[in-house]
Every structure is written in structure tokens, then in C-alpha cells.
Length: 208
View 1 (cartoon, rainbow, N blue to C red):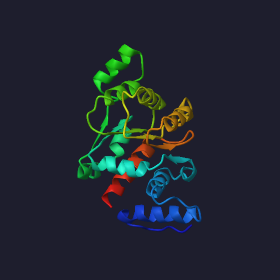
View 2 (cartoon, helix red, strand yellow):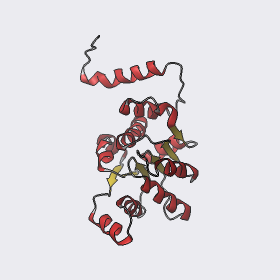
View 3 (tube, rainbow, N blue to C red):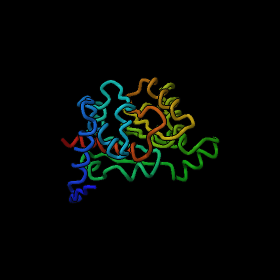
């Protein structure tokens, strides 16, 4: 077995070279390519070549939103911690996760909902453009769909990549059908790491 010794600052670049080599003749549209490649890089799973859905002009819309100083709301602190803070600061953006907030826990208790649902309701009160990134809770996507249908809260972009088995596929398909600009990993795969990776890909694209 050949071992390739690479300095830490070169590992990511080499990883992307390997991914592109293994993709071979499979083509990815240039506007979404950095996002698909970063999802594969984060997971080592080439299924993301097939399962990523991008609504029309969503990447251009996302970049425009970030450049206006958006708030990225995540459904887990893991996703929040995985988003590049320096890149956020350069654009005047911020990232929030409300899942551990005391008022969210209280809302969920009073309304007999999940914290993910209560977090969406709290995000609806933000006064800045919102990119909502869901990597764990399909109930967050379902609640977003309810708000979108009632026009009580329409995020600029929804990143829908929850992982799991219960209501995961259904919630992703509903967010696609909602008409809101979205990036979705169809099927059961996803996760907080994928949500963060997509956000980072978009942030890095803004810097180019």
C-alpha cells in the first residue's frame, strides 16, 4: 500500500483532486459544483453527486443574500460550530442556533411541539434575511413549509439535508414543492456536517 505524505495545508486541495478524478466523466454544472464537491468531501460519499437538488437560480440567490449580511439559522449547534466564522465576519453575516434557548424550550412545552418547531417560530421574528439550514430535524422543514404556505415566514433560502428515517424524505420533498429557493439532499442522507459544508461552500464562493 502506497502512503502519500501531505502537509496539512495541502490535504484539502489533494482531497478535492481525488474526488474529481473519481468522478471521472460525470459532469456537475459549474454553478453548483463547489457545493456538491464539498458535500462529497465532508462525507466521502459519492451519492451526493446524484441526490443533490438545486432549485432554479438558488446559488445566485444565496450568494446575493449572504452579501447582504444574512443570518444563517441552523437546527443544531453542531452545524453552527461547523460554519466558518471568519468567512461569516467578512460578509457581515452571523449564525444562530436556538435549540438550547430557554424560551424555545418553554415555547415547545407550552405548545406541545418539538424544540425544532419552536426554533423555526423564533427565527420567524428575525428582522434580517434568513438562510435556514436543517441537518437533523425534519420537523423543522415541516414547520417551515407551514409558515411558507401561510406566508408568515419565508426564508430567503432553505438548506434541507436532515438525516434519518422518520419523515425525512417526505419533509424534503415538501420543501422542494413549497417553491422556496432551496438546496436539498434527497433521500435519507444528510446531517449537520452536510448542512455546515453547504453553508461553507456558499461562503467561500462569495470570497472569490
